Length: 155
Image 1 (cartoon, rainbow, N blue to C red):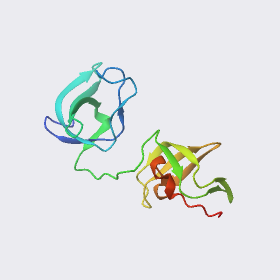
Image 2 (spheres, one colour):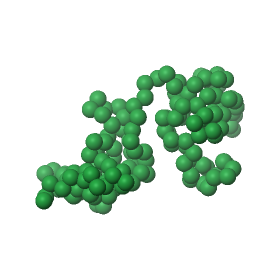
Image 3 (tube, one colour):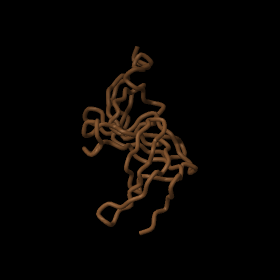
Image 4 (cartoon, one colour):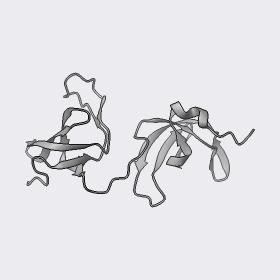
């Protein structure tokens, strides 16, 4: 088992890091670091003798967090940012349909289940709306704070 990162390497976290209960001063489940943030490797260790754990210092948040190797990539690798992350609440900007039938009206509230960044057309999400999970492009979603921007095509 040989680490792929070294002390001082600049790395990017590929998933949201939440407190598993071992981070002092934060509640279990609290978001510590958002996906895409960049930090520097401060220490390298192991867990259960079969996982490499890196202590990464995220300067903007001034936090040092333990990260598994599979949660990191070199900061120089391409990265596609997204406006929303898993569990974020969102508002549909327009009517959304399934097989030609409108199933979500403009202003419909949903929750992000999964983020997809690899599509050439841009970022899209699996969003849970009441009764449906839909694949929705980022351009069709707003944060709850932006709800006034909803387009109502019915009026």
